[in-house]
Image 1 (tube, rainbow, N blue to C red):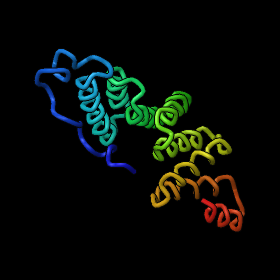
Image 2 (cartoon, rainbow, N blue to C red; image 1 turned 30 degrees about the horizontal axis):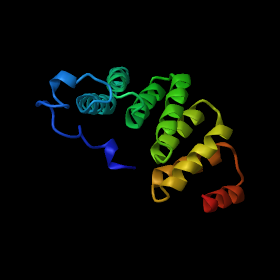
Image 3 (cartoon, rainbow, N blue to C red; image 1 turned 45 degrees about the vertical axis):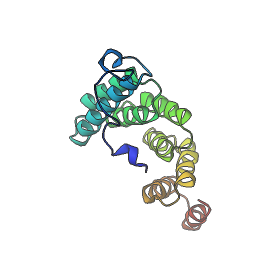
Length: 165
């Protein structure tokens, strides 16, 4: 997992110039990105506190300031999963994968949303993509193993699939 998921807002806040308060709400402006990072930090904290609805609102605010931000899309998708809105989660997480196809966590979260939606055949390529992009991440290996187990693969098939991952 990359450090961007656990770090706080990037860069200085406030001040004059292009990133100053006068541009703080402009999508794509440095101030907009700083504002989006503040909302993402709040969303992560709220989600950790079990307040998924409030976290979802913060993630949506971040996206309003920085549209198509992969991290904001992932966090919004995770909130939607936690709230049981799996259709929205799948749509949001597909957008996150499209925004950054090299982000293993986006693939993993999409796979998770698909598993939660009982779309196991669609979930497998997502989990495999996450593992291929980040082969040393144990949570991605566990996600694939659990999926294959749910699909009732025989032990030999499971071992073979994990060796190929």
